Image (cartoon, rainbow over all chains, first blue to last red; front, side, top):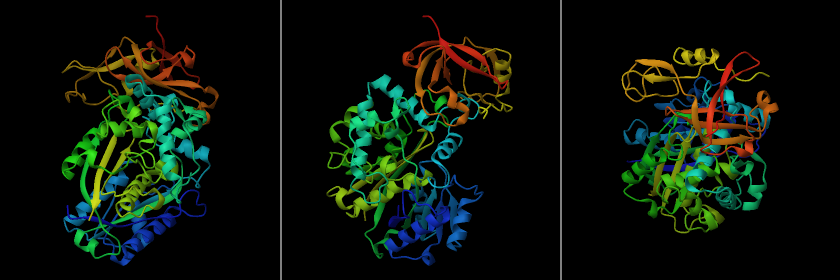
Length: 384
Length: 134
């Protein structure tokens, strides 16, 4: 497809009191455009996602109004947590068909600061991820819905709490090398296991952060991208996968739509998992990463727990995973969280990742997961 | 604060009517003969709208579970720790539920369970599962 990512950027991240969703998104948009050497005046396409902190009936209208845009192509995209990767593909389609030349994708919110942490947890529990009649009355947290996956994975494949903890440790290791990450203090497996049990078998360090922040990237034609400030990053392949709306009605919860999304992403890119240099996997919980590694084909089904042992996915590991620190340690402001995986893939391919740079990274994978592991979008990205 | 009570809709009302009468029933498709859950207007297996409700065995086994230590809100605060589970029913469909009548430490995948319809203080009845002797 004739489309490339030409600019990436973010707002201040972590705890950013005093900035609302539109201020955060403006900051991210301006940073991404500046990265590309563009201005808001160059934007003729706009994509965003819904937010939770304010009752926006028309998110893309709110963002267009804030930025003073009258785009010839615009949409609010919502494939839940997979939106962060899927927006790249939707923007690329708009560019490749000529509907727009420069599409700005931007999302984010003050998920942490708009309310107390307890209120934020309850808001997420009430957000409809659990079926309102058949699941929510039993009192699951959102993490409980993933804990059910973790427990079943342990039963079927012998995955251990230590192996789940290895994921948190590896991703914190990457975050320690990212100056923008919210949590940078090193942790070990014992720290994860000693952290508060939230919903067994998931400890608090097995779970994503809650953050303020916004992310943005700019997609344009490959020709135009080549004339801009930074080396372009090309979308080589993409795939989607869907299995279920609610975890309670999925018969085989340990196998996900990442099988379908990964197969199609690799097929359309003409490469395989063994050729990927860095994998920016969606990491809402530690178990999510283990299941994605399996379903995307980085290891055999059931081998994910053993695969992550010994720092294999951490800094200088054989397959560095989620090298910015992800949702577990870097930033998680709701649906925009998955955009940071794309931004990190771009920075790795441009060799801009500083201390956490994966040497010689030529091919990156970015994966988004939405709902309760029900909807997936995988991208394969490369230089040029 | 009261617990989130199920608000039945057109498709799910028969489930809750049965539950409120103390009966655990599952939807079954008359066309293909298979059970399904959650309730649908059309059979998720064959698409037929010929859905009938019939009392189910109420038997099943724990497919997965989690012990919740941190309540999602004040409504559940007094109950922690409690066991949320997915139960695979004898009829086939999975059911999201609570496991009661056993220490959380003793719950395990594969545990044989039997439905129990709990009458709640707020009036609404809710099916839960308790251990069943093998």
